[in-house]
Length: 512
Image (cartoon, rainbow, N blue to C red; front, side, top):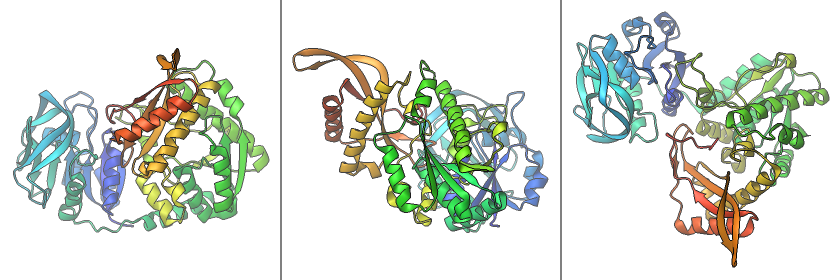
């Protein structure tokens, strides 16, 4: 087993991103609950600890706090955001509410590079998200970096190898943030960079075989990156014990069913079943506007369809899902973790007891870029590995408001044009996601000499590395104009096209 860096989770929505950045540096990371005993970390051979950020104030009566013995383990500790505030509070300094909250971009001025900021420029553009700050350093600490509103934005106790930073180095918005993480891992923890994609594949195949044994497994195959890589891993591990089910829920994009069936007959030698359930899903979604209700209805119906498919497949003990880290962290509730709920995911959570199926989630610890790397290593074709993410609930969460057959037809047609133009221009492969959203509003337009009162389509095109943060894409104006003209001219019932220029945060990538 490679050396382990422990990430203690205090509820930050970026905790999984921290773990991903560590693995990006080819160092194995494992996320632990914030209250994990120091003795357990010692037993598991942890060589360094990162304290995540979190939504709480360390000054609150029920603030999540770690086992204080972690500071006696003799291993390096890095506190990020809430982590630095907690270190100041627990180690003899003082943390206080800040008069001016720092959120978004800021400038870090490095006073002393040392080992944490080695080979970095003296000024870095960083991402802040905090209301508290350290106002008095604990004994043994010195300030090594400042921001506009914090004289102790980066601190160190070199003797004990304790470090704290007020900003988030793990997010895409922080300039050279991965290098800060790498400096902590390599320069301070002296970690060996021995965690690779091949290690993950070998470990996961062994884990699947150990969990499944000789039992049959069914997998919902959508044709997307997640389910395809999950299928490839499972097929490599258990071969003919795997049966894949493709559910036509009526919420698919133009030509998707035919494309998926064709692709997997050509590229996979597996048992593939197609369940035509479009009418069932649409009936269940009638008169439903709330996005959380839609997701839950789609999730429940999806499980029912699987239940029905078992009759033709035969006895199965396991249901495989392509659940990823972002699915898990965005579905965590306050009762399980200090993180706040953002949205639920259809493929996260328990199954009905009557199904008597156990979950197999081989990708649960990975981010999308890691999944793509695994897919490439397994030899999957480019059109699968680099396909843009598509939500499990499909177009059900891209029709804002009630989902109807006519709205789906308009959205499919508009989205087909967008995908065609993104492919033709080469931009499809440059962005994280590009899709259309049907808006439940009407807008006045003019066709010929007549007034037209019709639907509105929003374009959502974003750049990202891990789906936890994202920025809108600056597409060439000529391309945007061409896409808009084609949609309004070729899609009956659309009078207006708008472009979403919101970043994540504060918005999410999907509208619902």
